[in-house]
Length: 441
Image 1 (cartoon, rainbow, N blue to C red):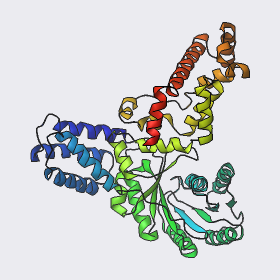
Image 2: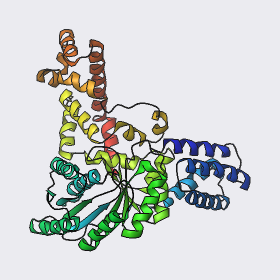
Image 3: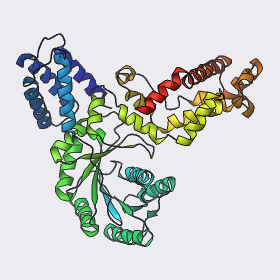
Image 4: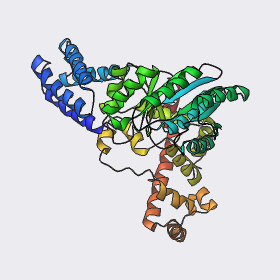
């Protein structure tokens, strides 16, 4: 995500390296490269031009402190302007109402149906809502079935009328159904087309007028770049939607849509889809995205993802086991499961400042833990609980059962022992004092 843009921006800042101060000449040179980087990322030309003019104005008006290098100052100005360009701060979704109604809009293939499931899952698990998904796409043969499968996976009911081809009536009936069955949130999936047409726009406008939704979201495939912005403009003119959803932001996207869409339609990006899984959905934070574009990582989002998987009671139990040196392979594999739930490994690693650039060319396999899990699952319950009994013959059997070799088994056991020692040190002596000091803060 944004890798090419990040590289180009980094190269443009190097023009200022070694310069004693910011001048009109070196700023012009730097911003020429910044503008090229934005245009290569498929950012709207007018947006790119206005952006660089604002940066220039701020840069030339800055009194650079002796302790701050011109290059660092330019990075700070560009970072702040990028955040403003993408909306400044995160914008919440309006789910007030009984039921609150969210209308999904967008072209076919943008990911509306999948995102409807993701949003329902998120609002159910994190906001305590009781959603109802509505199958309002009466044209695409698999649309109803797809929504039913998604609903089953997340435990959310799906309202559909197999023989009714009137999406306006289906939407109105669904809201009535929600009231009768205690559902406080209705998410209406609508039909899309391969291109904007009059029939499509008339239909979704009729649904909007009939159900008066609290929130209209425009879902767009981030990989379509500048086309996404043009489509958003046309939809906004008809629907006056409340916010944008960017899907497939984990793909090979140049980032143009994310950087242009707010300035063109003056509507906030509210959510981003970052993968295929139903929990691969994030609230869009402009400042954090600016951090990631400029290679600064995104520690806040990383911590939030970790907290979502954090179980306080389990943590206390684990701490007691570590203190008694009883941390075993059952605990080890449980920790692996928690990490896997946090999302794509490469995305997680790229949130650590300075790491994103180092790993950009590495191929991170989401099944990276498979070998470790296979080895641990090939152990008997007794061996997992008492790792010290793992002698040569047991290790050979485990290697055979896991499809690995003895060297790999030995390596894992050695890493496990080192991990256990480190954990033990952290819960005794100096480690305990460090933890106490952290808690006081």
